[in-house]
Amino acid sequence: MGFSVLKPEAQGAKFNEALLAMDRLSLQALVAQARNTLSPGDVIELLVVPALERLGKGWEEGTIALSQIFMGGRLCEELVDQLLPKASPQRKTQPKMAIAVLEDYHLLGKRIVYSTLRAGGYEILDFGRIEADNLVRRTIDEGIQVLLISTLMLHSALRVRVVRDGLARGAQPVKILAGGAPFRFDDQLWREVGADATSRTAVGAIPIIHRWTGGAL
Picture (cartoon, helix red, strand yellow):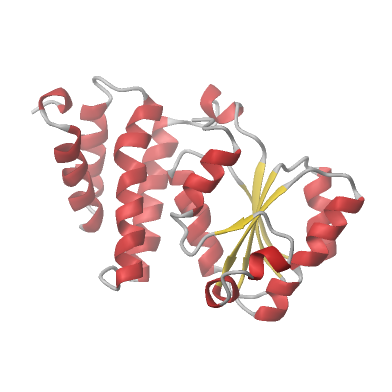
């Protein structure tokens, strides 16, 4: 049955079911069906992003394991790379973005956010683990416009202020999205350290960045 015969919510339900089952072949088949009538960007908006949002909601409610979030993000990332290869004009028109773990050694959270954003159709550089001063320098050198910072410990979260102040001295206009455990425990901490926003989940970062980038996809 072709994509056009099914209502969008029905197709989305099938996609979500396949994603929960980690069924790569079914996901690829559903995307192929959708491509009969939709552009790559529309497939991402109508199938991939809503499925990721449902995964994120399930994790918040305790019905989805962190491993499912991780693997779901990786599978969707593969699909989006097929839909929007690196040479795609839709990737080229996006503002430059990067993600980093700030002075922490726990990289899983960053990896989940990275996969989720790429699964949402965004191209993003991975700076890995990095010290605050080096993050400022690299952000300026590479002309980054949207910077995502992941932290686990409070002392690392407080170092976001160092990054913000360093970017201000360099006259680099950068939007900072800060996330991690300290920002979930204190919902005003992002303001105190000079970030522009925070998100409790990886999926929650997508609408924030979509708004900042003017819906580049």
